[in-house]
Length: 358
Image 1 (cartoon, rainbow, N blue to C red):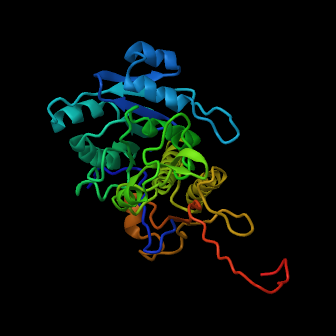
Image 2 (image 1 turned 90 degrees about the vertical axis):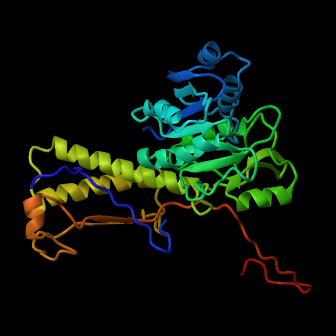
Image 3 (image 1 turned 90 degrees about the horizontal axis):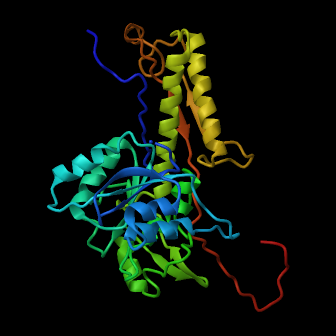
């Protein structure tokens, strides 16, 4: 019997020992100061027109657009999105109504310079459904509630400054705007003060709750101290890199199904599927999404079934031909992992030692 099924299904699994969707560089910035429909912007002046220069939205976007890299070069996207939502009664229906218009918008990241518990808890489910990622303010260590402790799609940033929660917008040029390989920890946010200038006890307590912050480090002010998602187990770049791979495989395989005159269930069609996946993974490697071995080779392995193999676990069965479903294809890979901690052992000798050795 005929039944509905998606043409391309990507199943992501993560072994116990880790191998580790929208435009991934585009971000929706949200405020709770005013109700405003989601709109595309390309200049700060456009934001001022819609939100005024005194608004939290304008001040936060001003910080975002003033970020530079360590060489002093400006970091700015060609466009971004802004929107406003006032959840006056804390109703889930209001939240759902606002977010309904977002699903087909061309962005991947979301930034919230405020904290709303009901919205955050609803957002955790929503982000999983639409495959997006958000960064949100955490006013204190209680922000990550029981319903949020399993979320690997929200990164919380601690904020208690009187000049407004600007870190949440300020981190986005160093992360989302850089693409899926953007680094989240040890990023210096220009133009803001640290949310925890010098309080190791508070910093430790927040990190234990899955909440990141900005601190003073090595003479720099407002440096991000973590890359943890709310679940306390997943790093933001891990989640984003996986989404990027899933998205590109799904889109390119779907295009293959649409654009090919024929895609036969034999060595001709299967080889086209394999080569399509190979091109995607090579591109992911060039985007620094994949790790490399000592020879510079990207760490991934593609497996497709042999037409002569009738095993249900490795090949193609009669049912597969009847259902016209190519099963037992897989991509194993290792994503690139950031160095965030460096441990150095110092060995002090009173006597002379030979230099240049171990």
